[in-house]
Image (cartoon, rainbow, N blue to C red; front, top):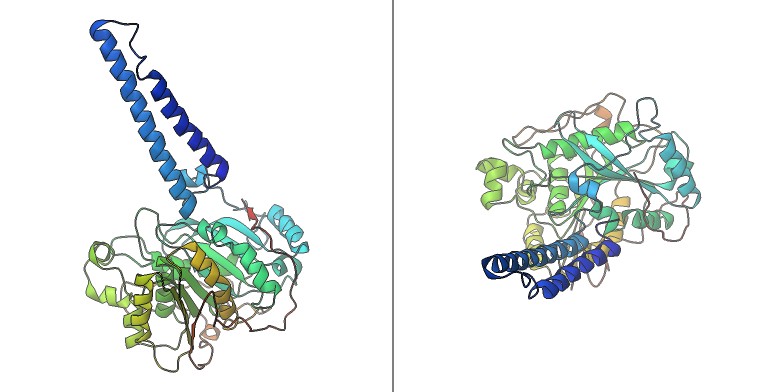
Length: 440
């Protein structure tokens, strides 16, 4: 039973009702058959136990509804950290997938659908191992086996988990529809877990803490390019995120412009966390705060990275951050700014922005190719805790981002103004929208 499903919520509601009913029934009956101090002690013991059950069941109901809204945990295995993954035994893998998953992918591809697989991504540099989701388009299973695909790396918010992209934002359905409409080329989407879940880690290499930047910008691209038919980091890779994930997407792309060609922020911010969070992550070192602040990076080392920045009018913090960051953008850059007149800081807004942002990425990344851009055995180097560290990749990977274009500013309801009209000449699969398929 899914922890975010309606059946589980109804079960919790029944538990609350049972606790309240038992309390009402036993409140005056407990201890009546006993006299004196024994009867009084028994009565208050029963009453206090009933009250504790009512409070505990009420707290469980509140936690269940919060979990349903934010999608933190979908199953008990995710809650306990024992989530199963699709990691095949040695000798069973075919491009990172087991034969069972490849067969299921071909069935879905025949229906015009891609597939979401749940995996575990290990970092050789960061020493981090976390669950992740990978969307593979239909052409991955029914197209030429030598074809490699561009990649968009997606970052979730805090608090939140990688599954939010799959469940709340309908990753598979949205990707399928945009590919079928030829608004984006067939591409892979990877959703890594960008925090250990105990605190907001901001996707940075923390001082005396987890090396999240190294994991997300070096280990994840290396693993995906090695295990799946993905083009190597560079012009074929993009980042996207919402809320804290929006900050992660822009910050990592600006810090590693040789690994990502473009970045999308939905309701994100552009300065590294201050206060206690900043002190715990950066050890009070101001230069690390600057080196992880997109606003500072844009002012001091603009690299021509294409950005898509979006916020809604009902989200005051996000719109204020976007307004301030726009002043730091270099003139003539290939940037698009979308400000919705209404909407808050929630999945409804991000669901509305997601398709248009994907279309924009599709117009900026390299399309599918039969030439691998990351030779076997290539390992990206991780960033050190200082400004200016870059990846070590083959010379052919050092291509610049897409040529500069006139900046476009869009404002309006829904996703109006976003470049939805870009068309690719590549063949596409036409199919009705379908719920995402998650294969464990």
